Length: 206
Length: 222
Image (cartoon, rainbow over all chains, first blue to last red; front, side, top):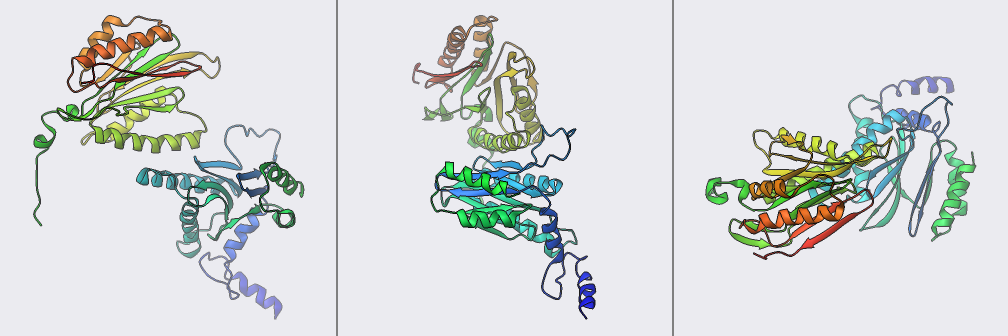
């Protein structure tokens, strides 16, 4: 009976827009699996700022990676993000995020509030899990930003389109281990020096 | 609903480009450029503001001044900021003056049959990444983006004919920054004073590889 159950669940994962019998969206979970192969990104929120760190995996000695960014992208003057996952997918999302931020800035002549921006991008990501027949984006993002309403904010989003605000978080390879270290060592109100140290520790968990 | 319809002619007068007034000039010096403009904003003969900003700093090496209809100056600079921010984040570098000229020209020509009533004047320093050599650069365009690259000075605004005359007389090659400042200021002020639609002081920026000097000039305040 158990093997039949496994065969049955495979039927629901080729269609991105269908639930499995257990209520899971398998394509989203497979996207997360792709992300868990990517380099670790750590983000920590402090009283006076945010530290975002991304591990660049050296794939080949002959790779010329001086030009384009692989992990870190600036979205606008007040928001930056670290990505983990399929770089090609990340490029699309980052480009869209930049356009969203500029459109808000043009319309309101003010910088876009951080959560609003992430919400809009996550709405796009969610669309790829509900209609269209297209696969989701294989990228998780860690955003660090500031706005005058809520100050410094650290947020992450995943292929399902869910997002959350964090005090400390990591995405990518070995992120469970890094997250448990961050949880243990988290002290409210760390100064920036401590933030960088904790970020380094999180990375060393590989 | 009653709709009030007025022709543009009744509101703006016979020339939409002179409705708000204003002028600017940019000059090339030795490893430096200067860009200057007046500060008047008016509705035909009535002056409304004496602190109008017509020159915009794009980055430490590139400035743009926009003459023409005030509302289009405001909107065009907002649209330009949109494009420039995307350029900055995608290319991870500041835009060069010549590239800005091409971008502005493209944006203006897109509206060929319903243009923005602005005439841009661009000044900046081109930096050769390999050698570090600095080349001063100025360009100006008409309202549909036709550029000119004269190499010495460019002018724009309601007293542009006077400015052409003053610049032709006063400009000479390889002026040092202090000399350039004097020359630009004299050329601008002499032209402003004879134009009722420009005036109420002037602002001058002198851009060198190491610094940007900004000075406000007090002239005939009328």
